[in-house]
Image (cartoon, rainbow, N blue to C red):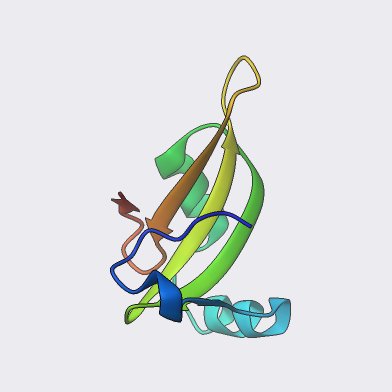
Length: 82
């Protein structure tokens, strides 16, 4: 599992695929196709999680050369988090 970078990581919970699909379908969060353009590289794993009052994408992104970076993105704004 990828690390969550929020102030309340202990409270974080990843949504089930059905829950994530419902949230995305309602337009409450950015679609992964939009997020992919922001983070660059190929998203090889993605989880939609909630914690600290935020919905975040936990992503594994493959970079050129095969390096994989773990990235957390605010799922609503698309902004990369630390």
